[in-house]
Length: 99
Image (cartoon, rainbow, N blue to C red; front, side, top):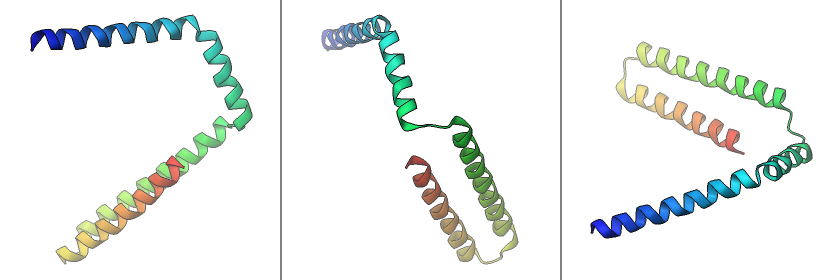
């Protein structure tokens, strides 16, 4: 069993070493291709940052309203339903960010 673990470790180390060697050797090519892709996609970093800030503000307001509604309501079922609704909204926002 120890030999199997050692062989797996050595194989993983060898593969990792080859990957690092390849990345270092072709670093300039990789960076140039990444820059080309960014230019072709027309990524505006300021727009991405502003969209992320807006999503964070929305998320913060959702969490804050959930906390306020959680502390303000008396019915436990209603509290749970409110939290589940907010979680559904947050999942939709996360899905939108992934897209």
